[in-house]
Length: 198
Image (cartoon, rainbow, N blue to C red; front, side):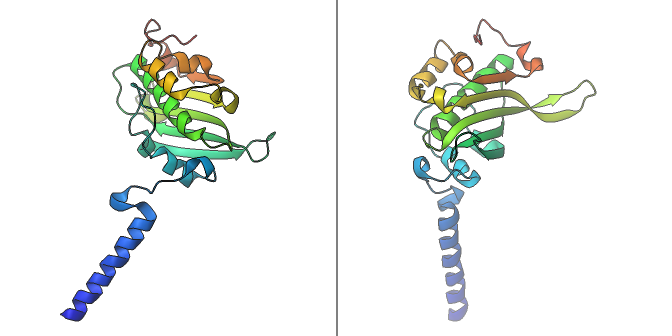
């Protein structure tokens, strides 16, 4: 019985050490020093799963758990610089206006974190939602796309932008972005008196 107990105890210790080194306790990933980290999918996921320093009112709080794809490419004209594309599935929304506000706030959150790394040159966020076509087929599609370059990001006070987003101007992130696109089926139902996009 003592030998079985020792073997069991040894197995538990090995599992605990493995779990702690791989994921941290209770499945949470360990913290990463994102500003100096290599730009990899694993490091991006780890950085985005950390507690953010800003908190936009309209956002998808658990977006990091719902990232469906991360694409990293080298910037053709700027060696060593990276272009990051992130797709995530949006949570529940009240209506199309709420969807656009949430996608904007989540983009503010993502960019405030990713642009802390000097190797990040461009970030494009694709907010995805389930859309049903005229035949009744439902598919996960990008409904909002917002792209921001380092040039714009360097001008932004992310905390101030998050406050502005929560207060009087949730459309500001769209107007300062290098580019954005909103699915026509969503855009035609957005209350433009509630969110100014142009």
